[in-house]
Image (cartoon, rainbow, N blue to C red; front, side, top):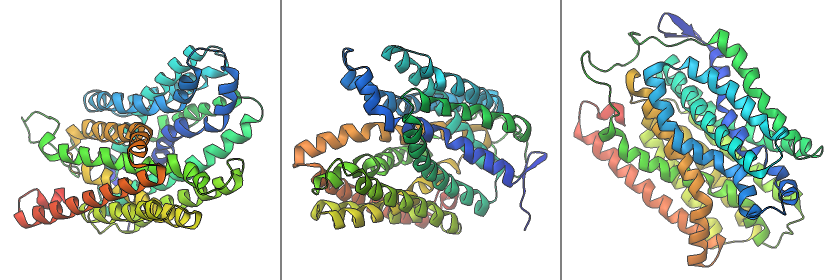
Length: 409
């Protein structure tokens, strides 16, 4: 089988996939690179009013900006094109990402982080859209969407380590890593191209028909994606606190980091599993993914001791790795070329909004039900309900024999 796929009059291969997967890692860099130097930032800005809240927002605010801006990025993608927005966003990303190296005020740094989030929303939307644009063959497209989860998960682990190592030179130093945006933009400039709207191998809106967002087809799926974004980030954010709650000292960063690393590897394994299950439709994988999350979280909720936390985190993270590409494929691959940017933008917004809401919702659930482990168990129960609902809905759609049911499933 050829290792290339037609995209307009040009053919995309492994090199284009590598560039798009590398670009997909930039939003991950924005959310994790700075976490090791947050204590330094808190100490540096301790005298500023509201620093206790504002310093953590340096990490959190890009995710909110992605959620808010991604739909607008999708509009730009569909109306003005993919490549120019991607290259421009990467260059601006490098500039505003490194801005804290020379900025001195907390407010100015927060403004730069808002701009970083806007760029990340555009980068993630375009990279995902181009993967679907370039690779129409279902097996290869799903493989690369699965590898997107693997690469971003591995990149998150690497970026945390890099941020920690560079942080030894001061809190300014890790921000230099944002120059990676320019490093990636240069080969993209010469190796990527604008897909053709007349590509016969892609799906298109009927001639003369307006290209609108297919809300009837994707709205429920976006709500499922919002919930999936929330469950995906529960253990990423909370696993360290769960380990400490079992009696491990907060100073024992080796044990805490070890559990987090094992969970991260399980997430990557889930993405690899999706990449291998290319013949199974996403609607059939989603109940499995939510089910694995449910089992893992309920193990933690019922037995909040260290061995159970480790086992539960592995099971749940395996489900999370399977969940992310399944959700993405379930929503985005049903879109026609002319509407794909906006559909991808709304998917990205839904997923990252779930990420942003995770610490807020977990705090509220924990306060209501008596602690973090109980809250994780409650979320696991909700994931089980969603798994059953998606399973029953998928079976009902298959039985309707609707012309688009096979595609939507």
